[in-house]
Length: 239
Image 1 (cartoon, helix red, strand yellow):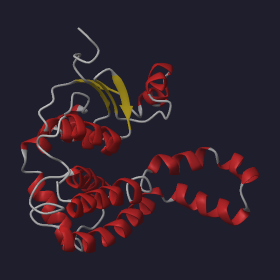
Image 2 (cartoon, one colour; image 1 turned 180 degrees about the vertical axis):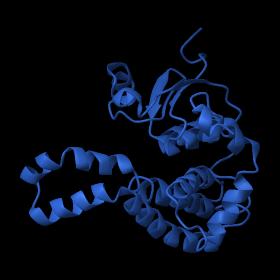
Image 3 (cartoon, one colour; image 1 turned 90 degrees about the vertical axis):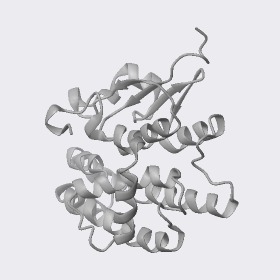
Image 4 (tube, rainbow, N blue to C red; image 1 turned 120 degrees about the vertical axis):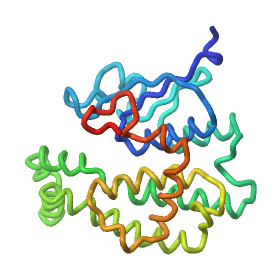
């Protein structure tokens, strides 16, 4: 079997927001694939193994092997799937709506999700002695506070991002984030709401986000790709 014809392989972690986005895209487009779990916690993080670093030097999931190439970064993967397998569309044909989809997706993927990641807080705690040499005193103090209060840090980052996102969606949303068709923006929204719930963010101030998330979770592609239904989901977290 040629590399192009080989079945795609997704390297994923059940709880990873970025992996979940790609799983949703694959499900929506009806693309069958093999899944290789990468446990980001076990053994100090399997993403740091020599084998995985050869796949992705950034040591992050997801990674998708498809059509003879290896891709990382969730939005880059989704764009590739959209360009090579355009049905159903995840980017509207209308250029204004397409720009709005990209805006919402980037708002979440670049503006909210990276800031709430508590592994950076854990890393700050672990390497605080080395940071004392490299950073001015006032910056070091801020970073140490983040490490000690990582839950509060995540809550604040998500809440700040959701305040802006709620306002944006009030202008762009129909049934979903942009109009009435599922788009790349929706693939980013649902995992981020799940993160908010995991970090116990009060969703009361965000009725538009909550409404769209509820509608999306009724769709089969979002159900089968959910973290509670993955091969590597721990038994206690399964649906």
